[in-house]
Amino acid sequence: MPISADLVLIDIDSSLMAAFLFYLIIIILNLSSQSRTHYGIVFGQMVKKIISVISLAIPFFFSIVSIILLNRTLNLKEIVDLQREYWNIAYQPLGFIIALISVIMVLKVLRLNKKGTPGISSIDELEGGGLSRAVLRFSEYTIVLFMAYLIVILYLGGYKNLYFIRGNVMLGIKFYILFIFILFFEKALGSSISDMRLLMRINGKFLIPMSIINFIITLGFFIYRNIYGFI
Image 1 (spheres, helix red, strand yellow):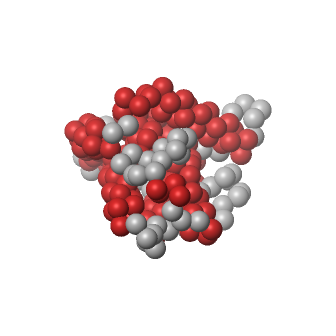
Image 2 (image 1 turned 90 degrees about the horizontal axis):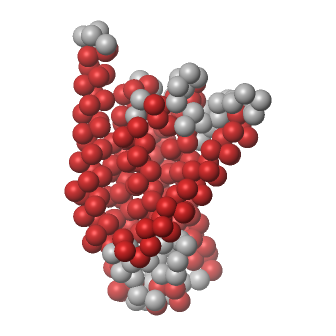
């Protein structure tokens, strides 16, 4: 993930796909950290939670694909550079909203700011320790932080300078404003939207269809602009 124009740990052409692969690896780590539990119900509920997180990644993925069509590149640095005049949120407001709601719902599923997780017994709070527990907590926080950071890169201009504010500082400001907004919005929803089945119904009946519609609209503009030259 590029922090500035000059600070990229691994600069590859398909860095966006590599980033999404990293996201899936973190989810797998989250599951494997509980694979040695002595309580079958805990592991079963953990699998359900991870499947829920992966299902919430589907609308997030369609939003990313729409950005790829819009910018015609898989390179995160190029995507940031293409936002010199206008951020991608101006062209993809629906995709931004879908991606943002996906992060909020992932935070609801993981419930990092509350004790326990939906559908998991309190024994999960006692089971596991040491490195396994550390991997679990690290992976859960990383899933949310990574999605929020990716939204800043893809939709909010990333590390582009703003007047006298340097790009890397601007990146941090955008990230913390977005992350604090996500925390407050998730808190504002309260416990009324915390049931796992309700979250999955919202995802299946609203987020996924809307993300597909946004993708189809973006694909239509892509075809008309780049193949037929109408736009």
